[in-house]
Image (cartoon, rainbow, N blue to C red; front, side):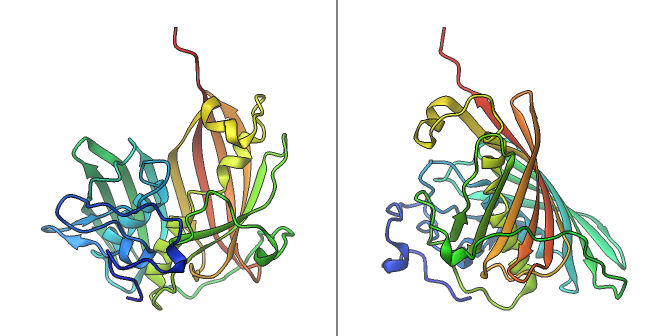
Length: 296
């Protein structure tokens, strides 16, 4: 794989990355996507992965989804590719602790196969994922989703809170009441020509951009720098449908709509397009958008 080894001296690409620290006795924090996906086998249908260091102090949800999907793919014949996944984020993941992925082979058919994955740390399960894979079929192909107008990614400013050593983002402005958000995203690494790994790269990028769509329709509007003081946010559950192959290390556009807020949950639905307008995937996610209350 085209990756910098764990513990290597950081290049200019990795400037701004928090200093890596020792994760148990295994290795230092991964500083690129390829190393992040280098899972270690720990018994039958079980793999262990490490976390990158994220500034907010918890494991990024897209990382756990991507590693869980990669674990499942290791138990599936290479003729099968993912066509859908459904995941529940159960509890926050601890960055300083490896994650154990346990795969259950639910069904192997001639056209489809199904897997379930539980991601665990010492505190218990942090993610439950079910995923389905399909062998290629020659059949009718029709696209009705239309890519919205958007500026080129190079004409958009990088996010100030980005982590460019793994993923790059170019978000467009979202206005109060819009209920929509858009952004260009790509994996920073050059990935091997393995379509299944690119699907995992897409899963990694899929847990971003949508929060702005939900925030924009909340009656309480606050400046970005005040957001964490005002709200507690998290991804709750996540579903993806893979329609066509993606090059996850190339720019692709997420376009999200928020369908409403209820019970401190925002329902977001998004389409993913390649730069040429090809509809790559459909994604749905519930996000937690809870107002912080003063302690009595």
